[in-house]
Amino acid sequence: MEKETKLIKRVAAVHDLCGYGNCSLGIALPVLSACGLDALPAATAVLSTHTAFATYTFQDLTDSLEQTIAHWKEIGFNIDGVYSGFLGSARQIDILHQFFEESKGRRLIVLDPVMADHGRIYKTYTPEMCAGMAELARFADILTPNMTEAAVLLNEQYTGQHAEAKETRALCERLLSLGSRRVVLKGIERDDGRVYNAVITQEGEYYESWNKQSSVSLHGTGDLFASIVTGLVMQDKSLPDAVEFAGHFVYDAIMLSKTQPGHKARGVSFEPLLGEIARFALGA
Image 1 (cartoon, one colour):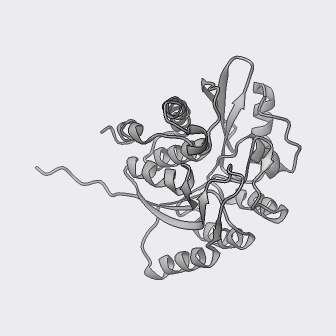
Image 2 (cartoon, rainbow, N blue to C red; image 1 turned 90 degrees about the vertical axis):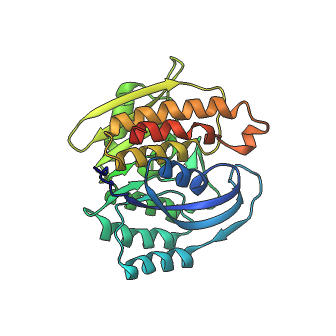
């Protein structure tokens, strides 16, 4: 008897594309593919390098993004999920607003509000775009900010990466009030040498997981974390299990990256570890 073939789910990956430095679509596409998904790129911008470099080229793809989504609708094929990250303009937020509105209740929506880190808002983000990202949060089935992005979304002052359990839960509850169904707050630091990631749901469930803290901070780790969470949830893993696996995988990827020359500029390396994602996602 032939083994029944499982339907391969499709997820639209709405992110930028960087030439040098692992991040955005350079991470999302291989990770989602390793999870057994058909990843459909919808590029928001093309950059020569990631934004941690002092200078970089930036090509806004707003018109292309609008045309891509419009053509997908015209073709009429099914998309099971939408996973968005770095956006290149205020009009892209309007485009996604409409796309999310049409997708609500029909497909999984993961919003990674990629706009800031370690107290710094990215140069390409305007106050209008930051406010617009907070508006998008109400459509999200899963919202995945880091500590800086959480402050930006809530229009609060960034107070650092450190937050004890009581503070973390209160912050997650405030993020939940923006309207998303579930929030994953990533990159919380404490004095015990661990990095925590917290999950909260509209039903009041709260969960924390942790992994060892690395002495190195690398560009692209947030994209790696959110991509893994998206892929695993799309494959029916529980959100707490997906978050716990993602945290440990990112730590392992940082340890691998430290063995590579120029790793601080190169960003996070994870390619030799992709099999671990496939095994966890698919039982492969």
